[in-house]
Length: 388
Image 1 (spheres, rainbow, N blue to C red):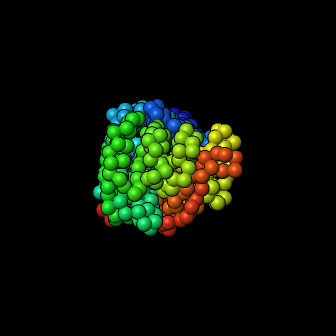
Image 2 (cartoon, rainbow, N blue to C red; image 1 turned 120 degrees about the horizontal axis):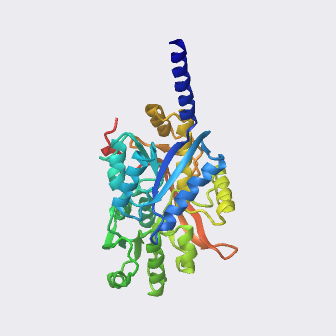
Image 3 (cartoon, rainbow, N blue to C red; image 1 turned 30 degrees about the horizontal axis):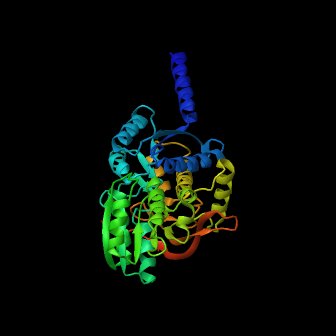
């Protein structure tokens, strides 16, 4: 009888050791196809860089990154999340680029007791009434990078601005954020189709409205097409354009070239941000991938570092959900943005800048920080969050 009990104990002990050695699975649902596919690619590559810099670990804990393409489709995002949770046994999900996908995926994931850490999409609903203890956003709330441009445009004396964005949650948040701090006359407010490539009709309407400036939010390939068509229509020299960083990332600038030079855009990060953690990241990313990191890559990297800090706090034991959650909320990591902390709704409180698109000494079109507009900026929806 003693031998049987001893054997059972040894088996259980061996099983617990094997379980302890299993890597923590992290499921990344992101956009890798469509003309916006490079956004997910950069988030993924920034995240993978952090893992590589720890030789396959985050916070000293072995991890396995599962990645799948949502194709910018909410239903596909839901299917991937379900598979990652039920079949792959992932405890942490991340990676979503677009807010319509996030709204289809995140609420169900966190209600089931799993963690979702966003490296990008930050819809107002999830920052406000839809906040949840298991949801964290390491990037921003959607409105933030448009709010800083609204303040800048108002301070520069523009009084009649034309607004343009895709008709989905992030587009509506972007224009709401701009208007919140601009507070001037709106010459027109137009919502385009998500993924649209031809803006001839919108440009004709814009021209007829005779605004003194244009604010637009069109990420990925949408932004490339709009900027090129705006310059081709002869509008660039007569009506200045502004926007959040999503329309002026390094890969958009490479595709657009001189048509973007001179444009001011809002961001919480820039490649030239003079912070040790950022210099380390930019050098490592450039060396690894042979390209300049974008805003999205920086967010993917910070996403991984945040998760690493929480995994370290629980020694990789994801059964310690309260401790893991508390460690995420503490945000004890060296962000590429410098100082960073979470508000009560688990969205960032951080500095936000305006950048100017310039051509550097090598003839490369890139961003340079113009000035800091917001210090320790809170999002507008935290008061609606009743999370305890």
